[in-house]
Length: 107
Image (cartoon, rainbow, N blue to C red):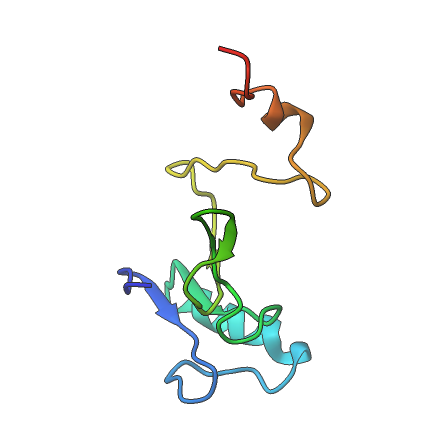
């Protein structure tokens, strides 16, 4: 992910950004970032193993795409400039999302 002005990137081990020693110190670290005027930060995903953020390719069937490291993006404050899309609800596409999808056989 390319660096974004106003953002910092938290690396796994060698980051210049202070890494909290535990989850208990995480609110303190976030308050420090916000106090310095940081708009947000990116950090490696704690939920995914390295290379576990691959996508999928459909080439004669469904196949894993190239391995990628997962990232979490955290934004501070209100962001009226952003628009988001729901991709899943409770682990499946929501009925609302499915109502806006062109299904096979319908035009």
